[in-house]
Image (cartoon, rainbow, N blue to C red):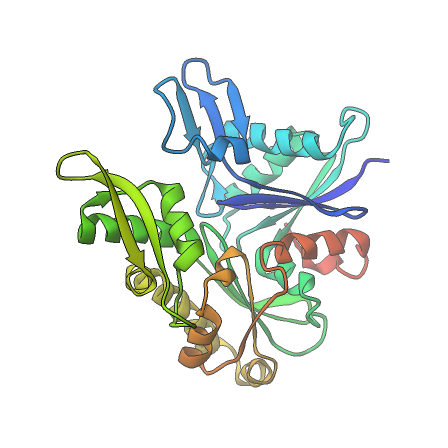
Length: 332
């Protein structure tokens, strides 16, 4: 009688989908702990506000790194918190859980994800690869004998996969994505302007004026940080051209992964991809101009899903409602 839920356990954000209500939770994958006794003080959006602002007795951490579990106990606490937030009376109804994972995940990492899900109160845990979830979420014809290219850019990993006949024909997981762009912006501001900024500020810059390719009018943003020279607060106006320069390396790494996928895919499937284009999903797909840059560099039209942040978890949720049809997409 338990509910069935799908979870996209991401490095940056965790999303939960239920069959009845759709996406019911979208919160940062951050946990704030009391450093003295390990007690959980805050989870999700509230904990993210603590990043870079905590006193010594509080530590705010991201329990997932590069798409996989880095801290098992804290991940358990986070998953349990999110599931209980979504499903009331969990002791009575243990949910069946489908969790989205990167394509390059090892057996040890798979075991850790399954154990985390079971430990948090699920009665059964199934895993689905993120690009497969994205393809199903975007309603691509994955069961047909034709190639579908999916590029899922999350916080910790970029997943590139060619899918045909309900299976992954080629996949690559590169551990460069949104977080790497944030770090690149922090380094650039420090090197070029002698200004220290936090992770949240770097992410705000990326989301507000960040772009991979010039689009529309020039943009600028006023930011505050700490002067490296004297430690005083310092204001700075930064423009979109500088941010393009800052994130050029991680963006190029993503484009190279897409290019490798096209090079290593059989010619018949490449012909299908040329006809159908590729799908961009994940939060990184929202980077302005990225679709245009990929189309120019790889010579394949890039389409962004209507709601790229939720594509993967929606796809995992769809499999819950049509388990017979999608029985082949789960991984062991």
